[in-house]
Structure formats: structure tokens, C-alpha cells
Image (cartoon, rainbow, N blue to C red; front, top):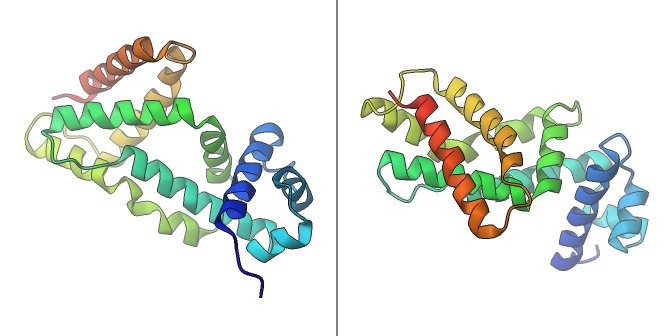
Amino acid sequence: MKRKDEAKARDIFAATLRTVQEHGLVGLSMEAVARRAGVAAGTLYVYHASKEALLEALYLETKRALAAAVFRDEGLPVRPAFHKMCAAYLEYLAEHPAEIAFLEQMVRSPLLPARARAATEGGARPLVELLERGKRELLLKDLDTRLMISFLQAAVQELSGHAAGLPPARRAVRHREIAQLCWDALKA
């Protein structure tokens, strides 16, 4: 069996993300990915046995990268940790639009196997623990944590457009403002 090259694997993932961003999951084909990645179709199948296998691997890697960038427990008190996670999520949204478009489509797709969904469930564990700690410390409303996470995800994604296109310093200020809005909505 042919040895896998890490740079080529990254190129394949990047080509898949760009293709999905431009044409959606429906417009994704192995041939289009191979062409965009600059590899032969046969080479693509060395890395991923099928379109479904490629999408699952990319989903797992994208969720891992998102969790690593956003959901870090740095031992801070609840409020600063909350603000830091919100700002990190906003920055990820700004810097990774193709990944976000991909995840949004995959989450609603029958192409996402239950095992992939289950494998990524713990990625937001630091956020869950932070919200639970905030409730125990009576800093946050005593709401279902899943409801709080859904609210935060929807609010942050919707509000992220208000920071798009701003210069970095102004964007950081806007991210802090959005994080404050989210905090105010959930504080006890």
C-alpha cells in the first residue's frame, strides 16, 4: 500500500472544504476534489475509500480543530473564561468560513454517520463544564445547559457578521461587545 503524505492529506481536506463551500455537499464529487487538490483520482482513494469516508474524516478533523481553538479551559474564573471562549469562537468563525459552512451542511446531512457525531460530542466539554460551574456559582441562570449552548451558538454565529470586514483592532472590540451581550443574556 502506498504511504500517505501529510501535506497531500491537508491539500485534499482543503480542496474538499473549498468545493463544499462553493457547490455544497450535493455538488461534491471525488473527481472534483482530486482535480482541485492536484492529485489523481486513484491517489484520492488511497487516502479515503469513498466520498462518505472523506466527509467523515474531514468532519472529525474540523470538529477537533474547532474544539481545540475555542473550547479551552485555562482555569480562569467563569466570566473571563466565558468571554474568552466567545471571542475565540467569533475569531474562528471569521477565520474559517469554509469549515463553518462545511460543518453546518454536515450536521443536517444524512451523510454524517452517528459514530462521527458521537465521536465529537465531548469536544465542547470545557464549555459545558464552564456553564455548569457558572450555574453552581450562581453567576448564570439555572437553565438547561444544552439550551444555553444552542442559544450561544446561534447568537454568536448571527452576530459574527457585525464584525466581518472590520480591521483587526476594531474586530476585537466588536468581539468583546458580542461576548458581553451573550454574558448579559445568560447571567443570573
